Every structure is written in C-alpha cells, then in structure tokens.
Length: 201
Image (spheres, rainbow, N blue to C red):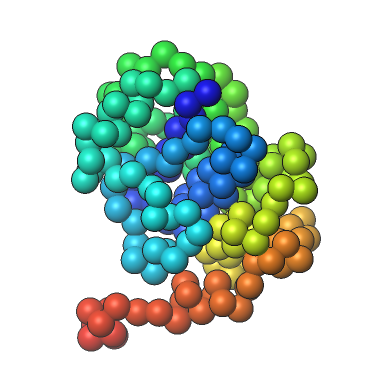
C-alpha cells in the first residue's frame, strides 16, 4: 500500500514527533510510507530523524497532490478536523480511501475509517507509542524513540503539564531504554536559538 502521513499546519513538536515515528516504523515494516506537511515547521525541530524526507505542500504542491491522488491509506496525526490541513483540505476530502486519525484533542470529526481519539493522554506521540509497541515493540529503535520522546516532552511542557500521567513517565523511561538521549533532545529543543530570536530577547 502507498501510505501518506499528514500533520496539521504549522506542525509542532508533537505533530512532527508522532508522524516521523510512525513513518519510520512503517518503513521498517516494509511499507511504502511518505510524510507530507501542509507547510514548514520550526527550525529547532530540523534535527529530528527522518525530517529531511518530509515533502512540503507549500513548496511542492503538484508533487503532494500527485501523492494524495495515488495514496491507498492516509494517516492524520495530532488533529481531528481536516480543516487543520489548510489548503490541502479540499484534496483530502475529495479522496475516497481509508483515513486513520490518531489524536488527543476533544470532539473529533467523523471523517476517518479508524479513529484513535484519546483526549486524556498527554500527546499524540504517546498514543503512537502505545499503538506501535502493541504492533511490534521489537522494531522500536533509537530514532523512533527520539521522535516519540520529543513529541511527549514538548506537548507536556517538559512533563510539567497536568496531562502528564504516571503512564507518560513510564513511556518516557522506556524510550530512554530504547536509545532516546533525553538530555540531548532537551538541549536541541530549548537551548538552541536563531540569531533573530537572541536579538529579540
């Protein structure tokens, strides 16, 4: 199957971490999987494993439209309404293939054939971990663990938000065991600034 994985516009750490982790997992399982993004993402996330393969709709619209037209299955992660994909929405709503929604926001729309909606869970990345660990936990490597850890860390405010549960900490500990370097991830996210940001500060 030709699989597409799509985050929302202006993807944040959880959106990128979850889509990249799922994509790396599916590729390791032997599937033809591609990540497309409605637009660009923050430069402080451009070190994540697999991010260099993301195809940007705002830069390559014809290529993305062709991928959508030829897709057999579409995953939408970290949002529950196709309007969150911006200008890509019309192409997605016209596509009659199964959609899979994986998200942790409330009141999901009913566009997906399969919906993983878990508003009580800290992040979409934590849900992705729960799914792929049940499918094939042995395939989780340091790259997948790094992406998931990044998504969980950013969406929980470094584990300080109320949505952070004991399960979240258990998942984080397992991700460290799989090779996620929590100190380096934190440094990459919070200790790197563009020259413009430093000037603003």
